[in-house]
Length: 474
Image 1: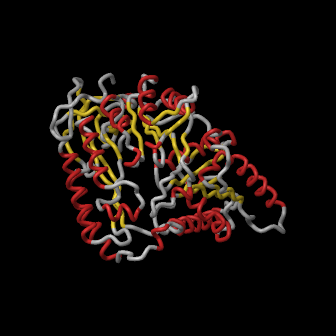
Image 2: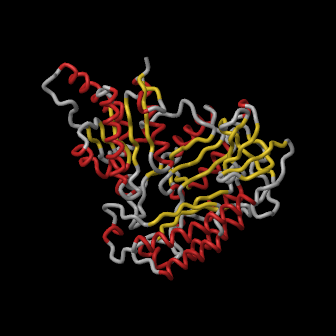
Image 3: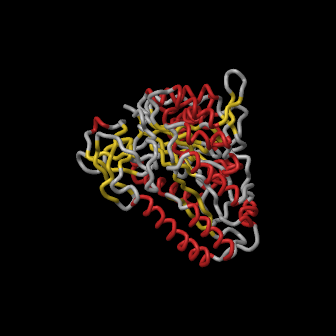
């Protein structure tokens, strides 16, 4: 009988990608995925260190798992903590949670099978060594190895309709609020050939859409077989040209400083590159951006948006905002609101500033009182939510190309994705999954759209303008 593997994934799409790779690594050891932690023979918590008190949430989850194992009499379940919390606080996890078997950082996932084998042997030894404690000291691996983990991770054997593909990892920007350079390491770009091979494997296994991932994905500078260095723009063009069945390409997360003219041009030149870009700005105040060490100003961000809209008139934007960064004044916040009203975002992620342990901002003076943070965040989110609703409302009555991805909650219903990453519910048979269909939008849900499939294609622009279809051949 196959052993059961449960992975709980926190945080970003990179963690989602890593969780899938870990599952594939453990498949040869007899582990099959399960959605029920209560039946698992192994549990992995793939953690994120971005939010405040991230480690405490991990310890809380470990306590819940410990109580569940004891209640079920399943003390032999292997428990692993992976990801950025493991990288940053591995020794503390071992100290506070001695029942954890494995702690490993993001750069060492390719060593997971070896560590699981060692943990399994340790468990077996404890079954007949009554003088040993119930659990032993966990295996800890948070080194940044000389070799890349990507050199050892397997290609996907199956894939969803919309798949992730990591092309770049780490960060050299050192924003003062961010832990990524410390937990993911320096920027590293995967070789071109490996990315193209993995993309072909994903498409052969069923993917129609690929999202290229990286902590600073548009800083990609991968080496090709001929020794040349490719940019993200060149990689996008190659994926679109060389893999005919790849209908859609996306990428995330971008840094404004790395948004070059060639990549901007690709948004107008490559129909498969979706007209929806996540471009974090964090603040509309140059003074705050300097304190964040973002290495770009508001005017640069504005120019990038203008160039992208000139290259592709139907493009839409999402962004990230941190409210209440140390020293943020009412004037600084007003500048952020002015930028939001100027750009008009299709969606956005906004958070109160929370100190990340070990980052420079955590020890800065002039921390903004929480009540002030709350007030500003509510004001910002009210505008962002209204902009998202207006953007979705602009789709009513129009026809969008929708990539059908999975069954909906009701019989006879499928859920797909618009070019702008909106969830679209339509009536369709399961056999339609993986197709791009033209759907006329008939109604709005709270966070999604509802539509009816039409045969004739039609043009769509979120601002009421006619624009070329991004799925002309689908």
